[in-house]
Length: 389
Image (tube, rainbow, N blue to C red; front, side):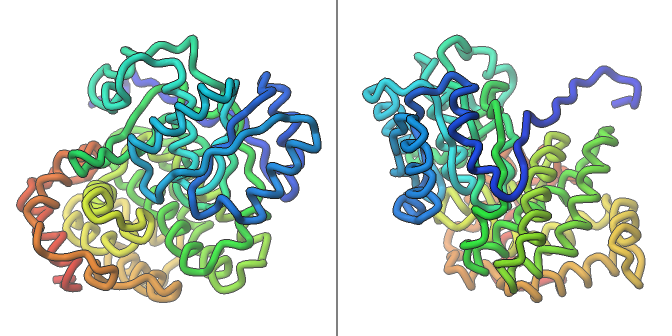
């Protein structure tokens, strides 16, 4: 593709960002015409103060909010169907997509499916499938992240697991983009250290893979590079001192930056992580963090130039690929990321299936090298055993 070829670039929605931003939620609901919104979150957050306090805030302001929280850590098509039934039965007129990537992805999908008469899988991000959608009945969305990871609050897609095929599918349509992303770093202060590390590393991987993806997108490259710098400076602090609101604020920025940048593309880390997550229900961010070095090694021949630029941005003493790779391993270790997939009980019994699934994943298309299924199988096996050769 030539630099002068026609492209279409889309950048984030309106963002209300900063400590205390959650107090504006009732007014933002009113601004979007939401009188009876449905707050969608995951089952782990249902009884947490950040959810109960938000529900109280809305009800005290006269907003008749409902709650749907039957969302798994890797949201499924069944979760979306159940939430859609609650949405319709309750006469809801908007969705507050609340939580980490699972709650926000499910909430966005429910709002989108409120206007459809086809199955959700008909809108997989393949070709022009998105043009099948009806847009008139799609419900407005306000996204409220409580982690700093996926950046789904500024994304035009949701990752939904198909339990029948054991595959994660990227469901895409422009109307998935929330009307407002309400980002309050205070909501992340209660996140445990291990989840802060896993979700924060997910945001870092988004920036890294977007920067290394082939193609011409200087705006995405600039955002991705600065996102990596911010993560390098502030993720360790957020992990080791969860009450440091400045570090939490920077990491909330990194999450949105990563998701903004990766419209340029992702890569093999996500291709393997999506496949492993669908097959074994692993945490997405943690899986990315474990797999990343093995994919980076496999991509070395195609990313030497990008690694040199990353080394300069991170102000590393040793330039180029080796310097960044050594830093990456130390960065991972410093926030207690496990070194192998076997550590999180991923078995080695279906390695060929992981390879086949990875090469089919849409993220593989953005990898700097178009690896075949056999190569992805080898990378997966190395990530199981810790082999960085």
